[in-house]
Length: 212
Image (cartoon, rainbow, N blue to C red):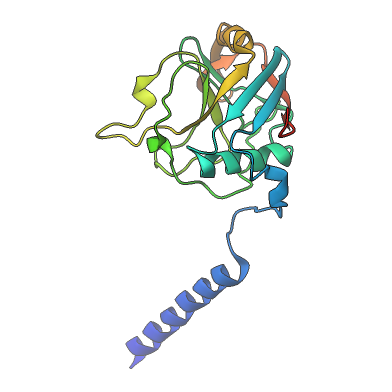
């Protein structure tokens, strides 16, 4: 009888937890965003990156990566990428950013991790933009990277989910090249390699008008 009481108590706790999720939605720091701000009818929205090394313009591909593009644009229109750094640069490989402020402080995810769209046909070729993630295939959230070479190892394969490409650089390839050549080191405080000696800063990201 005592065991039954514990069983029913446990069931009530599980049901309560489910109701909390249904009532309040995601536990992530979701923000109310007007869908119109994401240019939902624009299949190829453009984002301008203003960095301390120059300007980059990226054309996103909503046709092939709708979930990834919408997620990225949420961070853009809420200013979440402004005054962040490119914290990992490997010449001939990637320039990665989006997850740390100028003091190398970790930035929280504002939205839930997204479905991995790496099987969309877009490849990790030079001057494309893709989502970084952790080991779990569907863990991408706010960090992204520019490919600085043809990185076939990052594409999906028989035993790998790969990394989702969702756009390409339309202006500023030379800026990406300059970033890729910057001196890096092992950061003693963080214990990470490939950290730029001189900070590479993303000052602002701007969703350009649909008719730009």
